[in-house]
Length: 576
Image (cartoon, rainbow, N blue to C red):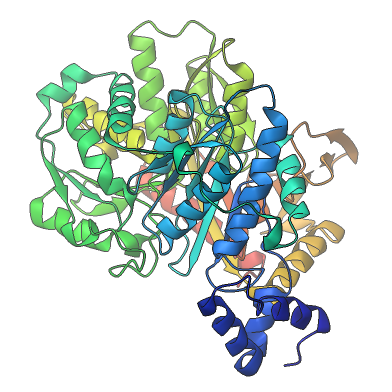
């Protein structure tokens, strides 16, 4: 494979003395022995996207390393100084999870921010992402950074940037920060000498405030007291949840917390799992084995930065069923709205939020309670954006997205697996008071609100060629959209890039009033919905499938028929 002149010129710059010895050695090795890796490492600059940085670790402009982190942080610092020039002291919080190079990237970020005169609160050890969000507001900061690649494989790292409301950057700040980052073309443009007087280490005191806030959200402390011995198996999957999830469950009043000790070891190599992603059944295998051994009622698993939650529950045959994100969201929202109504807290001014690829079952539940529901683009920052927009006007109860991210209360402005663990456990105690399990509650929800079934198919395409192939696939669906899917007519197309909704029955178009995003949705005549979008954090194109139906007689058989329908849709699209 030949290497372009542009790639080679960029690589040769990284052999200069501005870069450390190990980095220079990595680059020299790629130049001499691995031209394809050299191209992937230098063919572009690692993009500071709307959520921050994320990529494979290693040397190169398209890799996560101390230099790309430093340049991105300098751009963020420049934007903060422009945006808050009226403040005597700009402040930021930095947290990190258990990934490789976690402290390296956190320290580099602290170096750059403090060198630019920004006060830094740096956590003393790994912490969940939601605590970072909480700490921004609690400490009166203007920004925050958490070093994490969420649930990506071990070779990845990244960081997410936050604004003064504790949420990830949204318009206009996201694009304006990106502009500032792009101005930093060379490491020589970065101030990297730490100002120790501006770096303060934080830890247990912030933990205490965060846990106290979470405890204030409990709706059924009396029922927890009665059912405090419910057996709960928990695994942090080698991540930061180990710091706070067991403690938060005990703070809520649960006494019987059984941890998967092998996975409580914080290790960025994630030695016991292929992928530290609670969306994947294999990641919960050790926890489910522990649950079988101990006859536990509930299995909880959090990803490395503890913002996503996986849940497994017993079905009526005693087998453990891994809930998908839509099912967990439905159980949580149903519980929250039921308890708010019972306590007389619903005044008509409350709301919940979901994303456009999350189950419409949430809309049915909210509608039944007379609670407004908002649809937003994929990404929890858009849920947080609604919370900020309506702050002081309406009351946020909770929200969620199909990708295992949920939030209760508005003290945190990102998905929060810590409070979600507590509220799922609380829902189990509430169910137990009526002699039911969470599985019973799920079936009750289907009986009451209708049958909904969803599925996700992710197709991975790595590297430069993979990114180009994903772009071509999206372009193909736009230029030649399907007319029929699984022998059902496509009656409506939602294109969030052009912000146009096209009704194919009469060829009329209406405007979509959401931010621009590379997303396509196809609505079929039978109510099925297929959504296509490139992942914003992984080299994948994602297909979301949603079908609905009514049950007659055998509920489980009706659900199986809907699963079969999803499989037929996937087959009709010839996806591999």
